[in-house]
Image (cartoon, rainbow, N blue to C red; front, side, top):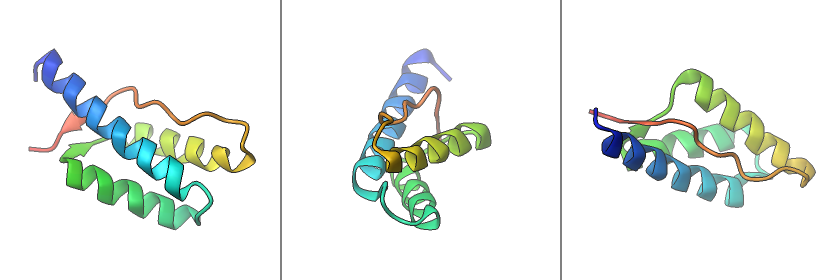
Length: 79
């Protein structure tokens, strides 16, 4: 995978995270996880299990309104 492909996947995943965080942060954890997974699938990108867990935790932290939107560190295109 080229750096350019990796960057494009990360940017696509970040857009999904931004959308989920802005619209779903007050939702139930299972709804947030489902929306994240659906968005990533539509964007044809994936996150490692560790990255997904971290992002879901950080979206949950938004409920206290003292945290910023999680930043995707790495994503991969789905083949």
